[in-house]
Every structure is written in structure tokens, then in C-alpha cells.
Length: 145
Image 1 (cartoon, rainbow, N blue to C red):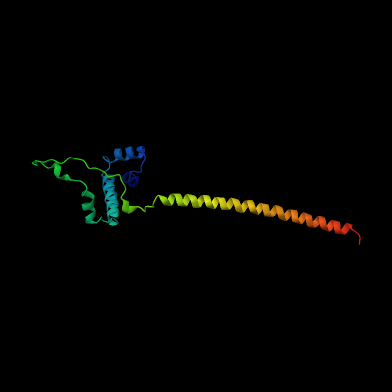
Image 2 (image 1 turned 120 degrees about the vertical axis):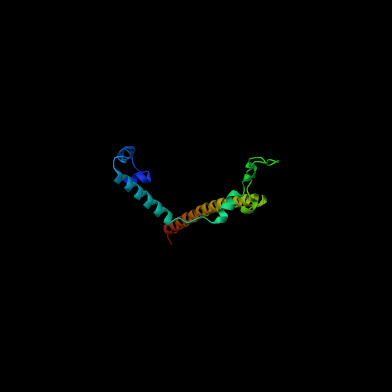
């Protein structure tokens, strides 16, 4: 229950009960301090400090000098955010390629349509040829020699 209290995972009833029992039992207070210090040691043991230049890069966009007293010329206390994307971060494609891709897509669709159309025409011609062959064979079998 103490560990869940320290981690903030205890239910409101458990929290109230532990807070009610803390003043009554000094051993519980000691246990709470031990658990808290153990968790802090465990968390800090695996902690990796950020690089020092990160602080400089983080604070660089802000000019904190305008908050100091005694400056004659005050800079505005706001920062403009450039919402235009940096062009060096993106691959740009010339607009004419859009039309080329569109024309290629239409050409592909047209060729696909022609291929399907001529396939079915070929099948139809083949079916007729097979029917004619069967008919000729029937006629040859009927004609006595």
C-alpha cells in the first residue's frame, strides 16, 4: 500500500487511510521515507543527463534580456513563429511532373481498357472458330462418301 501511495496509484480510500495512519505510527512515516528514497535512487540511477548544448539550443530562441531593469531600449516580449516549412527539409517536385504522371496514368488506363477489350474480342472470335469447326465436322460426318 505504501508503494502504491508513493507511485500515486492508490485509490482515494487507501490514500485517506494511509494519511490517517501516518501521524499515529512513526514506523509508517519511516517506511514511507525509505520507500520514497528508494524510488528516487532507482529513478536517478538510470537517468541520463541531457547534453549541455541542449540547454543553449533550447533557450536560444528566447531573448530574456528584455526582463532586466535599466535597459533604455525595450525589445518586444514575444517571439514570431515561422510557420512556413523550411524548403531544405522537403523534396520538391516541379509542377509539370504532376501533369506528366496524370497523363501516364490515363495512358495506362487506356491501354488496360484496350487490352481487356481485345482479349474479349479474341475470345469471341476463337469461340466462333471452334463452333465453325464443330459444325464442319458434323457436316463431314453426315455426308456419305
